[in-house]
Image 1 (cartoon, one colour):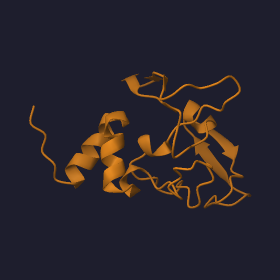
Image 2 (cartoon, rainbow, N blue to C red):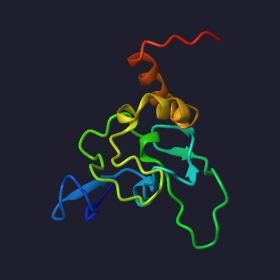
Image 3 (cartoon, rainbow, N blue to C red):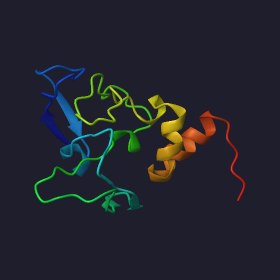
Length: 130
């Protein structure tokens, strides 16, 4: 993990604090209408490997963004109380997958990590038959 200064607008912790960064996603900005997502390919005790998938064309010079709600079920202290992503589809805040409206959860379910999907299904008492 890395520790970096947290100067983000709307940061819960303020400009004098530090936040933990756990991997590459800590250096990528959030967007409520992200242009990419990163499914987990595998996890070992020492590494995690993700695949990068564009959700639409990304032009040279465009920022690659991800939706933090796809990585966190509950943010537990690192939520974004006032989202500044600038998207026309901005949800106003980022409180993790658990904080999304049900319709948005259903739309994003195919892109979340298995742990998040399992927590959602358990919390909503949904049984999936295969």
